[in-house]
Length: 300
Image (cartoon, rainbow, N blue to C red):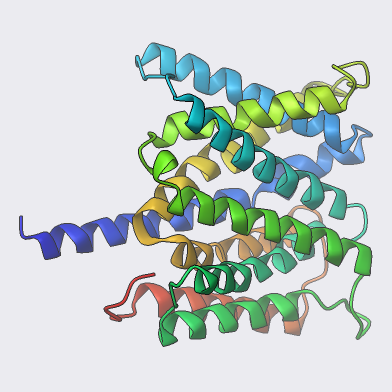
C-alpha cells in the first residue's frame, strides 16, 4: 500500500477515535450526576471510578497477556499525566455543584484554544482551517454556556471547568509530545494513568478513612458505567487519537463532548433546551464537519 494511502487511513482512524473519545467522555454526567445526587461525595465517586477501571483493565491485560512493564522514566511521566487526568475529573465533577452538567461539559470546550496556544509555544502552528474549526466550536460552546435569563451561569463553576480544561490540555499535549509515552501501548498508558489517579485519591481520603459507600445497587451500575465508558474507553481512544492526528485536531474532535452532554442533560435530566443552545449545537456540528472534511495538507 502506498505511504500516502497508509497515512490517509491512519488519519481517518485518528478522527474516528477522537470522535469516540468525545462522545464517551460527554457521558460523564449520565453516570456521575445521579450518584452525586444520592449523596456520594466527588472524591469517593472518582476513587470508585478509577479503582474499577484499574481492575477491569488489569484483568483484560492479564487475560490477553499484554505487557505491564514500564521503565522508571516512564513511571515518572505516568505520575505527571495521571495527576493531570485526575485533576481534570475532580474539577469537572465539583463544577456540577454550581452549574448544570450539560453546560459544564460545554464550557469545558475552551480547551482546544488552550491546546492550540500551547502547541504554538512549542513551535507547531495550526493551519487556518484548524483555527476556523476551533473558534467555531468554541463559539458554539459559549452559546451553550448562557442561562435562560440572559446572563452567564455561576462563575465558580466556570472557573472549575476552565481549570479542568487546562489539565486536559496538558494531558493531551504531553501524551503526543513525550517520546517515552509514544513508545508505550495505549492500554498500558491508560492502565497506569488510572492507577496513579486511584492511588492519589486514596491518599487524599486519608488512606481510605474518608471513603463513603456507594448508596445502592443502581448507583453501583452507574459507577461501573462511569468506569467503562467515559473513563476507560474515552481515555484509550483519546491517547490513540492524539498519537495519530496530533493534540490540536484531537482536541477539536472533543466538540462531541458538549453535544453529548447537552443531549444527556436535556433528555435525561430535563435541563432546558433553548434557541441559543440549538445554534450552539449547529456551530459545533459545523466545526467538526469542517475539520474532518478539510483537505488541508498540514496536519497538526
